[in-house]
Length: 247
Image 1 (cartoon, rainbow, N blue to C red):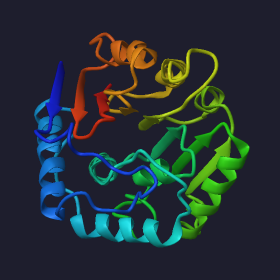
Image 2: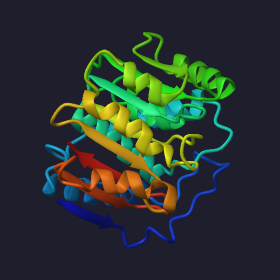
Image 3: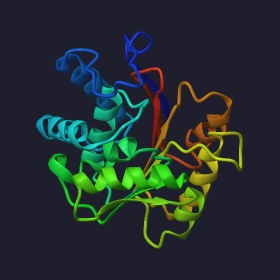
Image 4: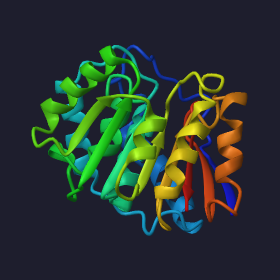
């Protein structure tokens, strides 16, 4: 099943990438848009329910604002809330995020299990960044929120990391930019390497489902094929977009 959720204001909802913490709308409106998106995901069978702790999400956001060094980000407040909410609902024991830059995208996922936004306990939360410099910055950022080490960032090729991961991958977040295909065409490389380790019920999240263009099309075709994933929803709440798929 392939569906689309499109917010009425997705195209006019614009952020300054260099000002990641500025709110773009009242919190009530932000939460309402994400709740609508979660409702569509639930109707499609991608998530089991739509309930998450809004106060914990805001505590997570405040910690990121206070502790993280973020030179720029394309993760809007809506997207931050959506990623947190999906992880809070799905509660993956093992989550791998590919292409995490300074760690903001990673902690938007991992923050449901570590730090002040934690609502469950996870086993492995791994961010993968191919740039050594950015991976080191991301790891420094994450350590300020999660001293336990459950959430961690490694400098590596995400294809190799997921391919060698010894356990099930319950949630895979895709936002890398690589070389084996044109730019973000590496999404499919990572997904295909991870796929054998993703059990039934696992979730794949692909950022840039709207503005990724031709490079991400092969990945979107893969997750929208019912031979691979049972359901997939293109969540369009900002100009970036997020494809959310259930295996």
